[in-house]
Length: 179
Image (tube, rainbow, N blue to C red; front, side, top):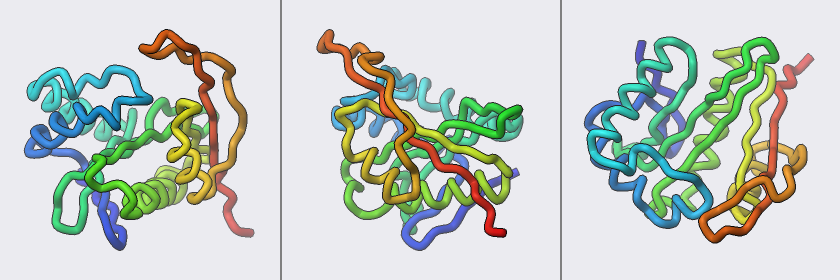
């Protein structure tokens, strides 16, 4: 099974071994790690390879769907995924990142729209949610732009390396088929 989701500026596809070097390189960008916890792909090149193998295995087993975001030239620019699937309630979480070299090009907005369509139309899920650090205002903007709405926040539920507590913001989108 090989999944490829075409867009105008980008496409989403399963990660493959040749992406390990870029994945490892990108995972060390300070801008990407500012609001996230440790990311296994940053530990070593072999960790990146193992991460890719696990992503591919999880897609086959329908446990999660982590895709590379590629520009039209075929360069890996980031990842987007659908995981923590709750089959009983037809819900799951998305997460995404893109290398700072590709910010402000509309790639993440397009990637979210592509994966939303895939999740709702192909996987037939009802609800998608995302949560993020309260200071990550860019995520709030892109989620709102793609139809997500704020559900709430968990006050001071995240402790970061600075020792301070921050709120975890939750957004979601519901599949509302047209009648």
